[in-house]
Length: 336
Image (cartoon, rainbow, N blue to C red; front, side, top):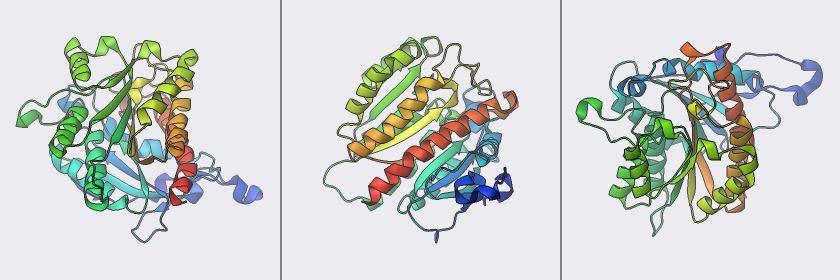
């Protein structure tokens, strides 16, 4: 495992000097992260890791994704997004997944006292590191008489609730939420998990049973269409009610293969972008309304090896852009 500092040469794009500040793009506003950066922004970390996907018998290539997503994001228009910092990449350059996850979680933990965090994976083993970073921060920096209630919202075709089997397979891209459930049980915290976009063909009955036993909110991909958006927003509002924090994670295999071909396991049906994007926006607006902080988000499972014309990386960048802009008002609300 190693931490590579931000490579700012990745952030390149068009420049329109005739338009002044209103013509800015993200590559012109992002800066390399240091602890002295002005607080109240969003720090991007890359998790360049394939080990979890390999252990889960998936198609490898996700380790290349953080920089391809950055490259796609660089040329997007700024539109008064929050201060954006690049914290570099945590690289799993051997088979020690646990060490790499610990490295990412420590960076998240150290950053959350001053900024929100957006992680670009990597496989969905990223989620275990993201949650450990958040839980570590809360355990040390938040004094409360009651256990924090963290609402976990996962847009994903898969539950990722597999139980790790033995040391050699301890943790993979298929186990993060089982690991999180176990951690919550150990800490005496509630496990409040929503998995939205689940494919019945990609999850066995045993996994549905486990989700039911854990009290998860589950939405099948076939139930997530444009006409269902109002009902889904109402369910999100109910899910967020009573939460202290939200952790939002987006697995790119939730989208149809036509929209996101560059993933480890392309979806046969998937959930349209026109459904996912407004729901992401709704999560932040509802969190604002209910005074719930969204300190950590991540985007996972982009696989540039199998992408077409950077289509999946561009879609991931669009979702990152949506999160950043939704977070802009959200961060302002936090500071009030």
